[in-house]
Length: 276
Image (tube, rainbow, N blue to C red):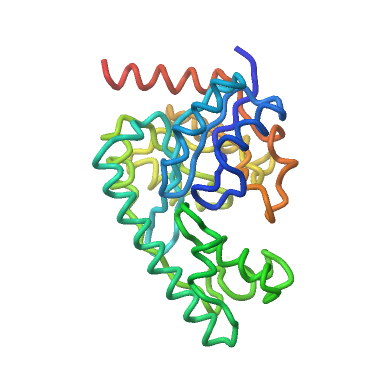
C-alpha cells in the first residue's frame, strides 16, 4: 500500500492553531491520506476530525499525546487506535487538564513577578476550549508585545530551566502504557531525539508498543538508528510532522514528514493479535 500518513498533528483542542476540520482540509491539500489527531491530554477534537475526514476523503486515526516522567526527565508518549470514549482514560485526562490549568496559573504568577503585565484570563481566552499549556502563554506574550517571538518566550522565560518555568504532573511510563492499553490502544515513544539509549531501553521495558521514527527533529542517522531499534525489539514504527500551525510557522512540514499506509496496517494487525 502507498499513500502519505501523518500520525502526529495537533488541533485547537490543545496547542494547535487550526480547528480539527481546518486541519483535515489542510492535510488533504498536502496530499495526506491518513492523519492522526494527537492533541495533548485531550481527545475532544477526534470526532470533529473524523466527520471532516469523511467529507474530504481523509481517514482519521484517534491519537493522543501525554507526558510521562523518568527521574525528572520529561518523556512524551503517543497513543493510537484507543477508544476515545473510554471512561477511565477520560478520568485521567480530566485530571491532567486540571493540573495544566494550575501550572499555567503558577507560570503566569512568576511572569508577573518578573514584571510582565499578563493575566491568566488572557491565556484562557487564547486557549478557548483546549487543554491550556505553555504555548498559549507564549502566544499571549507575543500578542501583547511582551516578547518579540514565540521562541523567545520559551527560550528566555517559560522553557525548561527558565525563570518562569513550572514542572507539570506526569504519569510513570508503566502507568501511561497501561492506561493506553486498557483503552484498547497502542503506545509509542514520541520524538526520542537525542534520548540516551539506556532511557530508550527503559521505556521499551515499560511496555511501549513502538517508537516515533519519523519526526522533523530527527536526522537521517537518527531515523536509521530508531528503525534499527524497532526491528531489534519487534516494535512498531510511527511518524509524522508534529504539526501545530500558527506562530510555530511549520506549515511546510505538513506533507513533508510522513510514513506509509503500511505502518497503519501493521498497527491494526498488532491490535488484532492483542485481542485474539
